[in-house]
Length: 85
Image 1 (cartoon, rainbow, N blue to C red):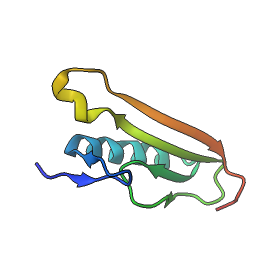
Image 2 (tube, rainbow, N blue to C red):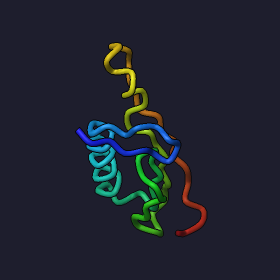
Image 3 (cartoon, helix red, strand yellow):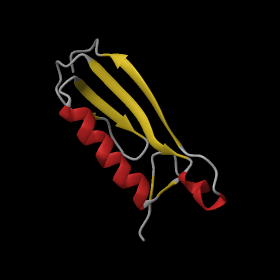
Image 4 (tube, rainbow, N blue to C red):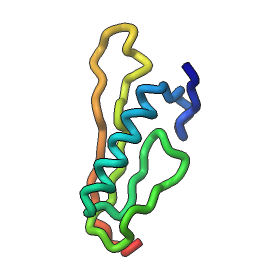
């Protein structure tokens, strides 16, 4: 399977990329997200500029450790959109 580097230089696995796409669809689909920044994307993605929230996330943190059978998790921050992107 192909991999690419995230913005922090870690390998993004196909599972990382697929989960990131699911998260983005869900966030944009709710209509309340102005922008999303993800560990898997190279740039901030603009949703609805006047929406009330900005979200930052690492959808699946720890996937490089899956073979060791250690836990993975989602890290996120939710902020008020004060910039009216």
